[in-house]
Image (cartoon, rainbow, N blue to C red; front, side):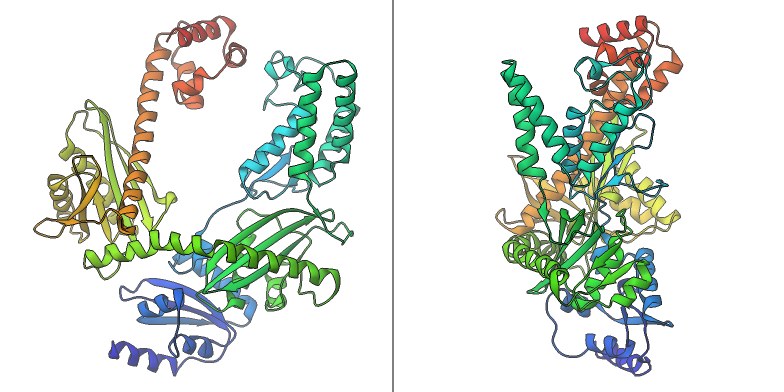
Length: 592
């Protein structure tokens, strides 16, 4: 430890006080954090003097070396920082590891438009027909469903030969078979666009007139249905009115620091109303100013459209963000605009103070439980865990699943599925194949190796996995989970020779292991069901008169499972198959 400190001290003496980026490394020479600074020497020195708490203390405890890159300006350092984080994916750069994107509603630019929900915007040439972002896909879907009930838009991607079910229930005008006045389509489109911009008066007035008409005609069921739609609009969709009526699309950022965490609120203001808002809470590793600047800079490459301008708190360097984002960035200091930023900050404060205890409990169940597992297994570090589970049906449809946990949390982008070549009930053979396939690929593709492997099974499976890793010249710890008579995990099988390590069933570690076990089991079972269903679907399609190789291939590609195919009505089957063949398939599925 003294040698490491001396080494760092010597390197710090050579660091210039210029803008640039720095890369922190652990004992395995892995980059664990990337940051930027106006003055590199001052910022780097601050990590190695004084007392630190929370995530910063944990980061500093793992640093054994660092590198730095001097650049010409602070904007260049921000660009370099984000690129380095994307490249190295350091474990303490939490923000950019969160690849969540937010959904938008698109009103397609066609002669007869459709409403659809999209997440990825890169393929779009124009953005003036996109509305959002929405905080989650449920909110976007409910809005689309509401508009589809009110306006008889086209629902099909392609025009069919005859009107489908939507036409018969009054949610489509049958554009495929009927000539519809262009003016009527344009009027609907105009009202929908106004609605999505936040002006609900057109829709509200239309619904109120319809409700009165149904009520006058004594059609009370229909009148009640319209009233429910009106209540939904008034309660759910009416957004908070703000006092700036310049119709400029802007985003407003606010923050609040609390006990080692930073809460962030983003308001999306469109047409003078707060349309949506997004909340985020992150542990602080860097200074508040640097963390907030990094958050704002990275926020817009996660499939979120840039507005005309953004408002930020005064701690943010607006010049850096303006140069990076190429839009107007302001830190208001008076009037209504400052009031908006203060409102975002106040909401951030309310969010973190309400959620703090839940955040700490969640941390105990994940990060702290992960550290407890590391200590029990006498490991120096435990950042990545890979878990395996196998599933088959009397030796058929043999599959395996692998899930990955990083820093105590599932990393779903790293999950893998394996269709096993052995078509018999052979647990050891299955384990041997899946471990070999996975880690041969890790070697050949130079992928990130796990610190720990957890296998489903007892001593036999553990020994098989260890032998395969030894043959591949890989030194990775392998453990198993043992279940009691009630089929509940009660101990770890670890060490060499293998021994049982009892786990307290009331501990956070037990719930952590149980969560990992449930995750890999559910992931594998779902894959197994999908494979079985696909196999059954192939058999069914082989027995339907009129379905040959080409149609069978197209149906398998489009629907994949029996369940999805059985959900189709005869009318929907007629859209993709000739009438006679559609009827044959419909009747066969009904019989089954």
